[in-house]
Image (cartoon, rainbow over all chains, first blue to last red):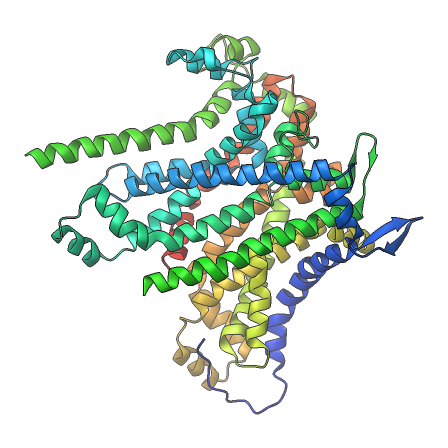
Length: 310
Length: 279
């Protein structure tokens, strides 16, 4: 950071305060303070409408009490699967599309790029319902399309089956967001200097081997950023599941992830009363999961990548 | 000759793959919009056909018009999005200016404190945010949403705008100071116009998640009078789930404005993403 010359004598420079105050006040009051407050709430329980401090008991309950533990581990496991599908399907496809787009003199480039990116700007509500209708047995779009390629017998009501619902939803989310890795990798590929590519071509590296040996190592930092963005987004997801499967994340909680679990716990559902303290406990766990992911990224991935670049 | 043929076949397979994904990206939306203009029998008998004189019908839109208060929802979404955007851009730019222009104690610490918010989702504070809004008497008001979205947008805005503010020439600002301009005038008259492209980028990035958010409208402002269009569509479709005409029409109404905006701003958006990644 380059600093500007300091002309003023040590007196209070009010304009600095005026410039900083609105952002700092709103950010602190409506983001940092509630985040801290939520963590604090996770250390209390409500007895006779009073908050009673119970230390880490809420966490113990969540991890091992038979009424909670099953739902919690189920949600965490589902969430991990949700994330894995994104890493294994969304990001490789994004890289493939970016690699194809970056070929020089490819026609209709802008059209492809703009179109594939469209789903990312739509809300989960639209995407969720649209796919629910398409996959619906009633409308029959999916089976009749599969009939064209002779795969009709493979059709199932995927969103309604316990075994397939979560994977289907993950793939819908992949469909929606594949444009983001595509765009970021595309930008990274364009920023590779021409000299490097020319040098590689002089050495006889072309096509696929050029991509694996030269380009891929150079876009690793972007892949790192995409991974951490995917991680944070996935462990914070809620809308898609809520829209398509409702707060109960059916069938039989098979699509329940941490976001829907927290929502249900916080607000209650059917006969169960809402429990803000347990909701706050789940939020705190999500916070720690995201914190661990982000720190791991910052300390290991980024550091190693920097060394690699040198 | 041989290599020319090989490059031809390679570009052909590129077009096949990219074209396939383009089709996959556009197909669901096209299907929804096309079928929203058909009668019920048209929707079910020939879902892939364009509406013709026999199947054309706007009954879905009539139902939406009569049953849902979509004009109000749109208005609410517009107010929330524009007000939050204004606050994020103004306050974010002011803070970025203070952090890059002046040297003072706690400068680096303040910058780190604000940057933290980029990675941590504000949703995790929901339990306490709701309590706070109850205490402030702001539940079921658009103000509550505007405050939360402003807090959510500020970190990224400060981060991106700081990068650009550093590039504004010192000579220009110092010339202004010699001419007797106050620090406020230097910011508003000299610096702000110069970072307009960055402001546009931040605006696009901030706008999309706010317009599309379901979580905070659902929790902080679910009342009929304060519903945003995303929540309104969600509730409406939930109620009319068996009325396919109405559902398709509501979905189309939610898709079209975003799509039109995207067509206008897609260049800016894509430029913003690619510029950010190159750094």
